[in-house]
Image (cartoon, rainbow, N blue to C red):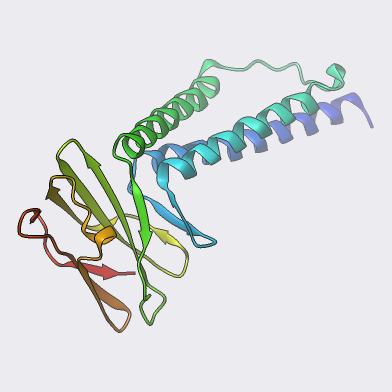
Length: 203
C-alpha cells in the first residue's frame, strides 16, 4: 500500500472518529442539563449519570484512537488542524462535565431517592419518582417512562414541608386509564404537599 493511500485512510478514520465523538459529546451535554431519565435493567439512571458514562466512553475511545493513529508515526497525515475543530469538542465536554457536576451534587445534597412505581400501565408506561429533601423542604418529581426506557422530561413536581417524602411513605395515588395514567402525591396534616396538581402520565 502506498504512503498516500495510508494517509488518506488515516484522515478518513480521523474525520469519522471526530464526527462520532462530537455527536456523543453533544448528546452528553444535552443529557446533563435536561430532565432526561432512563430505566436500564430495572435500574433508574438520571440524565447526569448517563452523560458521565458518555463522557467516559468518549475519553476512553479517544485514548485508544490516538494510540492507534500514532502507531507508527509515519502513518500520521501531515495536515494542519484549525483551532475550531479542537475548540468545539472542548466546549461540549466542559458543558457536559459542568452538568454532571451540578446534577450529581443536587442528588448528593438532596439525598435523592428514585422509585419505580408499581403497577405499570397496560401500555408499558411506568411511573418513576425522584424525591429529595434539603433543610426543611422536600421536593419530588414524577416521570412517565415508556417502552424505550426513556423519559424526556418530568410530568409533574411538588414540594413538601419538613422534608417529608410522600411516595417513600406510601401516601400517593396512581391510576392507569389505558396507556395513560394520573399521579398525585399526598401529604399529612402537619406536612402538606405544596405546589402540586394531578400529574398526567403520558408515554
